[in-house]
Image (cartoon, rainbow, N blue to C red; front, side, top):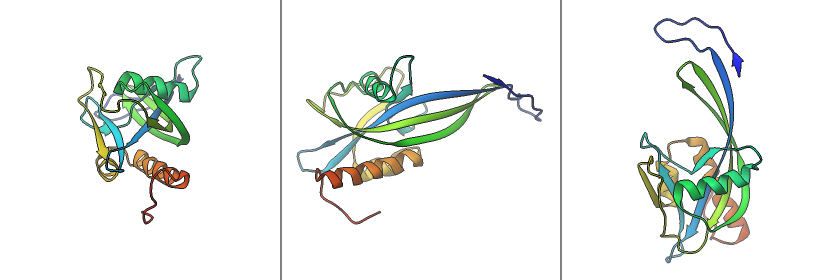
Length: 165
């Protein structure tokens, strides 16, 4: 942690900076109609996002993503496809400025993909059509990586190509 001394009017001052490494996954399936679907979870603020969480000591980022998908979405049968990228964001936790970096992977859900289960603290879990997922996700940086994931699936020949967005 780094100490920062600042003055502000009306708000408590930020006294520390914390850097946190996290990882998560864009999870997809192809439904019975051959359409791409993306699994999203609603956090405790009702923001739709992907399962993600802190990298624990001794874990790789991909291992973290797989663990978090299991914990937050109840999906335990996954095929890793590729690394999609890293996003950075920041937020305030009381008097701490948190600088978060999140590595995002693309995974194909295997087995009974209707058998999904959110964690108790979450407000929802749902398979969305690709277009719905891109529209509803709360974080535009993650939406860009969902679009990249679709392009990777097109390149692999798993889904049909569509006009570039």
